[in-house]
Image 1 (cartoon, rainbow, N blue to C red):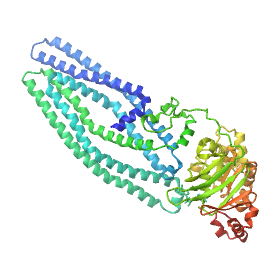
Image 2: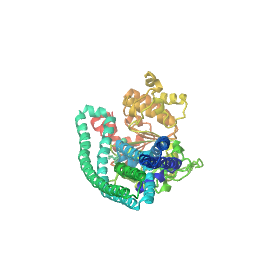
Image 3: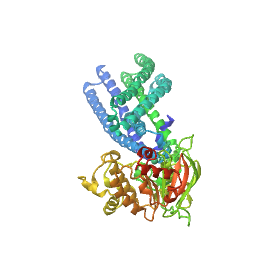
Image 4: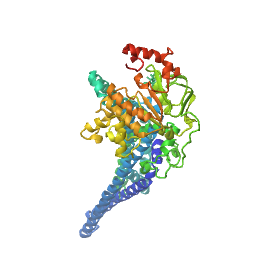
Length: 631
Ligand SMILES: Nc1ncnc2c1ncn2[C@@H]1O[C@H](COP(=O)(O)OP(=O)(O)O)[C@@H](O)[C@H]1O
Ligand SMILES: [Mg+2]
């Protein structure tokens, strides 16, 4: 229950809609309550006419008038409840928007480390389920249950006026019902959680399989994947059976108890009417009122059912919302106003942490953050005795210490898995070193605002990592405002322009999820163009041309050489020929720096680089492959 109240607090922006819904519910209840009184009145009139106390003509006129009033009251219920329903639809949709936007906002704030341990499809499934269940429940509440509850409260007051024992009996029903339900609820929710976990895992795998369907097909794993999927879903069948048995058993007890109470109520009404305490009209009135009070109790079964789902959903939701954010990412997000204004961010501050969710930094959106000035004379990039481990346990990097001066070109060479890409990750601030520090333009990178740090670095990742959408969108990803000429120029320098023009749509060609419709080499060239267009002072190339054939590589390399001209560059080489011109080479062995020196120096030192050169000239490509290097 508290988690539902939290949702309401969390979506304060919807207060006007909540008010409108409650207002409509009250009106619906009032109009609905008029009907039993009118019918009761009609019954008395009929009884009087039948008993001969009133003239038939007068009685007919009265009952027709009453029927007209019933018509009016029922029309009012019809119209007002539909207006309320409209508000309910709008409210629940806006609630979905708010919850989804905040969730996404939250996820984007999570540190890289968190994403390493999550499966995309699972995150998405969890988001969809929890939000759908929360909004379904609020929609149901606002569309019918709120007015039912108000009606019940009124019925209690009215019945107290006629016969207090009726009120007492009705008053017993609710707490006992809720108590019996809470007995069910703990077990029910645990089982629901188990089911959701299986469904989330299956959905995660589903998304992964669809994303890499080629591998699945080529290894003929369709049947295996399908079996895993159906096994997870089938396991929820058994859980559902246990859950539902438990639930329905409890519902029988609850409902039987309700039936018993109503037995008492009817006995009281009938006996006291016979004894002359109530007129016929009053009896009809009371029977109808009791039926009205019964409706919410009976529908409470499914209200409780969906409330439980909503509670489970909101728990899942807040579990994610409560996780700590990466404060440096939060600062970047805060500096970039988004369209989230509609989702309650309109005040210019992300207010979520005020609800104790600790969600988003409360930093106002400002543009006053000044650019950090480079420390004069400091190296552009410096690793100071950096040790790092992805997970607790063995370090991937040990005491890495080097610096790159302005305009210098440095190559990293080492075995596959030796930690080259990890150095790039640390430089980008995707992870924090366990020991030592990474400095950029003289400042510890941990103290630089992440957006400023990352704006300085143009990177081509080892895997091209493109997005669905057009080629143009991908090239201009870092600078969406770039002109067509700039995009074409970047593509030319990446040797991509010609193949792009061969597509029927040219730059507007849609390239599929993660660029699936392109060849590996084409993807890499788009990624290079994307980095070229970013035009950052520091360039990082992580095996940027590994998927290209020699001819294309030479062409792209030309563009990259031009780009590196005057720029500080860190190159992880795929072919030794591409790093012959660098200023210094750093060789890595098992996460340690082995040697640092110019290509000429290292060529004769007998170290890794010299060995690689020797292997290359002897054409031993098998041993070269271990070093991510080809001949
Ligand atoms: N996200 C990650 N989580 C855990 N371990 C990782 C992660 N990324 C890489 N590693 C491990 O770190 C080591 C260095 O990897 P990497 O820097 O990618 O090597 P490379 O020199 O080939 O680029 C490898 O042993 C790899 O298994
Ligand atoms: Mg790598």
